[in-house]
Amino acid sequence: MIDRALKSLDGLFERMSSNAILLITWLTAIGIGVLDFRLVPDLLLLYLIPIFLATWYSGLSTGIVVAIYSAGSAYVTQAILSDNYQVNSTDLLNLLVRLVSYLTFAFVISKLRETRRQTNFIVHDLRSPIANAISGLMTVQQTSEKLGEGEREMIDLALVSNQRALNLVNSLLDVAKLERGKFDVDTESVDLNTFVEDCFNQVELWAGTNHIKLEKNLLVADAVLDPDLTGRVVVNLLSNALKFSPEGGTVTLRAQVVHRSLRIAIEDQGPGIPKELIKEVFQPFAQVKGTQAGTGLGLTFCRLAIHAQQGHIWIDPDVAHGTTVWFSIPQPVSQAANPTAIPRPTEV
Image (cartoon, rainbow, N blue to C red; front, side, top):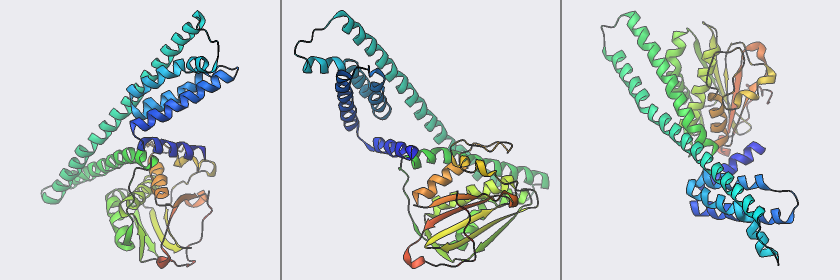
C-alpha cells in the first residue's frame, strides 16, 4: 500500500508545472520551519523532503530556491514569531552549515536526475537500431534462396536474440511510464483467436528452435482489451514459459470469461517457482535463484500493464506441474459469461 501511494505521488508530481512544484515545496519548507520553531528537536533532516521534491521534479534552479529558503526557514519563522529575536554568531554559523548542506544535497539530486534522464535517452536510442537489425535479418531470411541450413539457423538465432533485446528496451521504457500513470490504455473488441495467433507468431521462431509446442484452448471468441499492451503481456509470459520449458515440452495458453472478466492462463512444463518466491518475481529486477539470468523486468511490466487495465495477475503456486501465470481483465456486461471449464487457481 505504501509503495502504491508513493507511485501515485510520483505520478502526481510528474504532471505538475514547475511553478506548482515550487509553491508546494516552498509551503512545505515554511511548515517545517514553524515546527522547527515550536518543537525542541532539530528538524534538520525534514527539510530534505521539499528540497528533493523541488529538484527531482522541477530541476536544479527550483531546488536551489527551496534549499536557500529551507536553510533559513527556522530563523525566518523565529524572527516573525518572536518579539525580541536577536541574530547571534551561533545562528549565523548554523545558517551557513545548513545552506552548504542543502545546496550540496540539491546538486547531488540534480546529478542523479540528469543521469536517469540520459539513461532513458540511451535506452530509447537503442530501439531503432535493434528494430532495423530485425527488419534486415527478416529481409535476408525471406529473400535469399541460396542460404544453407547452417546460415538460416544463425539468422534465426540472431532474430530471436534481437527480438528479446527489443522487448527488454521496450520494457525499460514503458515500466517507468506505467508506474507514473502516463501510459495511454486504448481498449477495443478483438477476435481472440487472431490475437493469440499474432502473439504465437512473435515467439514461434524461439519455440521452434527449442522444439517446444505452442497450444491454445480458447473458450471465448472475442474480448475487450488493449491489444498492444495485452499482446506484449502475453508475449512476455510466453517468452518466460519458453525460457524455462524443457526441450520437446509444451506451452499452453487458455482463455475464458469468468465472472465478467477475461481470464488467460499461460502454462509451461518447467521446474516451477517455489511458493515463497512467487510474490517477489513481480518486483523490478527480481530473479528466482538458480534460474537463467535475466533482467527481472518482464513480470514487472506484465503486472503494471494488467493493473493499468484494472485487472489482476497471479501465479498458480502448484510447482509440481510447472508454472501457470494467470491474468484477468474486466469485461463489459455484454461480454459476461460464467462457464466453469477452467478452474479458478489459488490467488497469491
